[in-house]
Length: 392
Image (cartoon, rainbow, N blue to C red; front, side, top):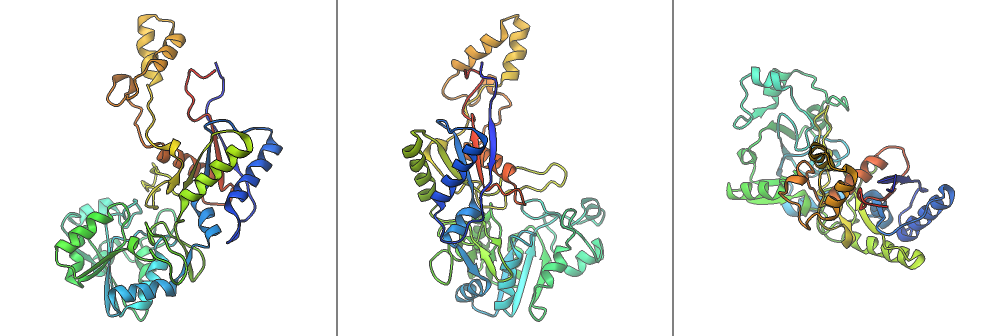
């Protein structure tokens, strides 16, 4: 039996600059790590590259002023409603800054008791004590402060996001409301920008059907070449704060990069590796109940060998059943793995394996490995991921 299963290595690299050759950058970092640590690439290894590395190599940035200009072209300059943004300095504050600069009146509709990914706005017990029905009730800023207090801080960041967003206004032009019904924005304006991520198509459909005159989503802003970066598929979704006046967009043309890296490694080593670009992982913090996935997808680009879901049996299930029968457990478990059908969905022996897309699993693993802080490992090497208990 092979005694080591999945191995994950964070690969350190120098600081990449706009215009650098990303393919060569990744190869150089991998080869330096292999020389220093004494490991080698194998068939079906997986190389993950963080999305920010790709975006920076592309120079895929846009200024606040450019976002304001595009919004004004689509909505005019008098008023705009913004529905269901994240509570995030990194993800939304720069968009709100651009919006506030371009419109006389901004109506901001926040979902409650938390945003789309679980960032809390209010205490659940106090909400229930106040008799608030989150399915029907529209709250004003005055309602919010009267019920929850003048200081409502995020448990991790310490930010009062209602106050923080309010203070991004220009000449006090932002009005904040709280509702889970996107139609409520139409009480104030017929021009609506949807800022949610994973439910954006449904939100747009509901608002249009309710009588909105102009509706766009963040995914429809900065989708074409113009004054800076762009992303034809996701627009501003997946973007991050870069500087006080610049926003880094989600990378584009990712497929070109992952296939080029795969091809270069094949030519250099003869090994068939898989490559993906990853952003936020798809997992939930058990303490704060915050769902990590603020990007539109975990992996915006990946090579073809990563398509699909794992097809696995549950070793724990097999071991428990076989031990009851007095079988030679290890060899019998291996036999069952070798004999498993091509599709284990619904099979009793797969109970508890919770199948998800391979790219979501691997992207989450890479994100947890590299983190978003100061580890300095924007490239991740995963080895042995596609091996099972029968590997020798």
